[in-house]
Image (tube, rainbow, N blue to C red; front, top):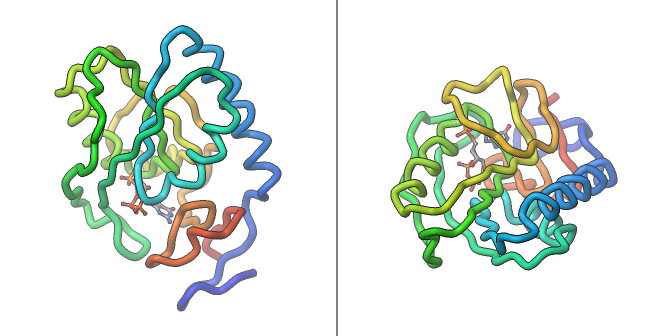
Length: 175
Ligand SMILES: O=P(O)(O)OC[C@H]1O[C@H](OP(=O)(O)OP(=O)(O)O)[C@H](O)[C@@H]1O
Ligand SMILES: Nc1nc2[nH]cnc2c(=O)[nH]1
C-alpha cells in the first residue's frame, strides 16, 4: 500500500507485467507499420513513460513527437478539454500512431483525433496502455490496448494523482 496526499493506493500492475505487455505491443506495431515510417505521437504528460518503453521495443524506423492536452484535475473528469499544443511536426499524408497512457471516458482521445484529422494525415492509429471500457462515453477506435481495467482510479507509470505518482515504475489502484 502507498499513500499519495490524502489517498491510499494498492499495487495493481507490476513493472514486469507492464514491460512484458509493452514488448508485445511493440512487436505488433513493428509488424503492422514496417513499410510506413510512422510518427509516434505521445500525449503529455501521462504517456511519457509508456512512449519511452514502447519506442524501445519497436524495431522499425519511427519518428517520435509529443502533444499536450489536459482534461483532468483531481480524480474525476471536469468534462472540459483544453487546447492541443505542441504539434511541431507536419503530419499531412503521414501515418500517425497516437500513444496514450489511458482511455477513460474517451473525451480527450475523441477531441485529439478530431483535431488531428483536420491536418490530413494518411492514417491515425491509437495505442493506449490502459483502457476502462465501463467508463467510455465517446466512441473511439482503439487499435492496440495494453490492459483493459475496471473503472477505478489508477496512478503510476506516468499517471498522476494531483501531480504526484507519475514516477512510480508500476501501476497502483485506488484502495
Ligand atoms: O478518456 P478521458 O476521460 O479523457 O481521460 C484520459 C485522459 O486523462 C489523462 O490525461 P490528463 O488530462 O489527466 O493529463 P496528463 O496526461 O497531463 O495527466 C490521460 O493521460 C488521458 O489523456
Ligand atoms: N491518474 C489517472 N488519470 C486518469 N485520467 C483518466 N483516468 C485516469 C485514472 O484512472 N488515473
